[in-house]
Figure 1: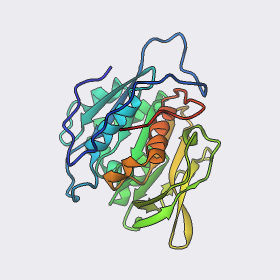
Figure 2: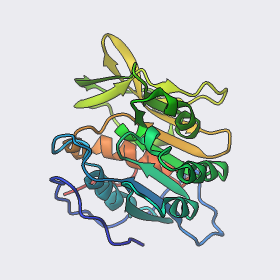
Figure 3: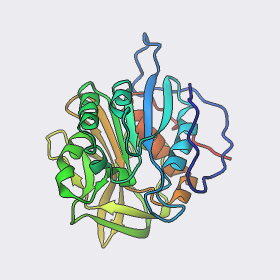
Figure 4: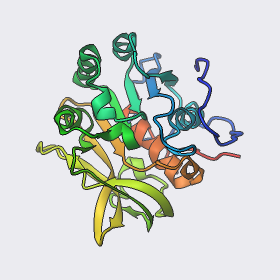
Amino acid sequence: MRTKPLQACGMALTLLLSLPVGLGADEPANPDSKTPRRLLLLGQGSDGHPPQTHEYVAGLELLTKLLDRVEGLETRVVDAGEPWRDGPDRIDAADGVVLFLAEGARWIHQDPARLAALKRLAARGGAITGLHWGIGTREAQFIDEYVALVGGCHGGPDRKYAVVEVLTEIVAPEHPIMTGCRPITIQDEFYYRLKFTKLPMAVTPLLRVPIEGESHTVAWAWDRPDKGRSFGFSGLHFHKNWQHEDYRRAVAQGIVWTLKLPIPEQGLNVEIE
């Protein structure tokens, strides 16, 4: 079930999507549960970047059109710009969140009740995804608690980012998130040399890209110690990159995986017209 979407900011892609498809086997949802997973996709308006970059709401609206094909999933795009007074209650009622907004690691600290609600979500095994600047912070003081929720962070005065044209490397082709995904050549602004959790249950690198002569992890999956799942991706600076099927598939499947819903053997249907 969909709620009325927000108006997409900037110039969004024009999409005509095909009909939903069923799901195959990975980790089936509880067959006795008829309650769909409730997913909040949290975005906001312009953060001062040029048009066609950091198009948070437009990107999330596109994602919902892909995710609404998934059985057992209910999506809602929410404007989480400040002040987001009802945010903690919304998080408490959700099974998962996607953070695609400005300085996500700082944003979670803007309201102590918000941070507490996200910690409760994690403690009950909830799904958490961070995308692009949604995994970031300029100030190092916000890194640790974000890493404890998402597994990785682009943060502090030593954070690194670069606009590059690269061939992506799939590090874990056997991981469900990478089902049906192929390496692609793409221009994007990637955050790299990220800060990752040092817990024994470490993150699983999914995608790497070459920058400055080294291979850097830019997408990861994390089976958290609290039995929940997190997914992060540092790309998606340019809105046009949603045009790439393998980008759409990796992001959509990353979110579905965090919700412990199955992914088809051939991968999700992410075609657009």
